Image (cartoon, rainbow, N blue to C red; front, side, top):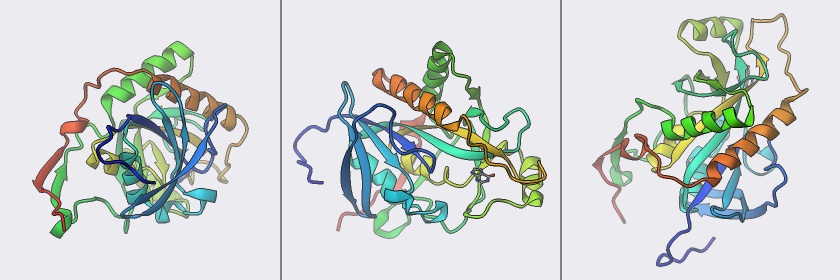
Length: 269
Ligand code: HPA
């Protein structure tokens, strides 16, 4: 992708999906490849007014990257380079909390990171700089509120608040791990929510996520049973809701843009 550095960038919005999502319902998607310092990223763009929508499947084309091998740095950098300011993401999860059974949609309010070996920041010392990120409200409060309000109008049942436990994958958890996560306060487990959400924040973008549960977590039933019936319809309604909220422009009152505390900015070579 070539960009003219003097032309003002048109603001875009983005929707991120995972394994169960192949595009945006009823929309004409145009493939675009974005070059980033972290490699090539493929996205799909819908030319819509007032904001073009960028659809990113975090696993890459043909779902080639499993959760622990996703190009998290490249994906978020590509969205930033495209001028994205607001992002809604979806994550498939297993349910631990009995009040969030399979087929629940949960607007995440917090997370605990149990992953290892993933890149966690764009600021890693040396020329890349040194910065801290405030995470008192881990997901954009303004986007969360708008989504919940719009869901109410649309009659879509969203649960307000849930703690996401990010596990490394690609294997599912053991029953003992799930008992431990439950004691630590995790409601839902998934493999792809971290570091995506906080990398987006490091780059100054507003990010909120909705988890959709497709199974009870390990040990809660005799066998893991992945729910398939009803999932497509649920995701279709969720994606339409994302579009309805993102279409509306208004300033966001939240802590996201002030969250990055720069100690030493990146150095140009
Ligand atoms: N564990 C981790 N990730 C998942 C699960 C699960 O049970 N279900 C869907 N994604």
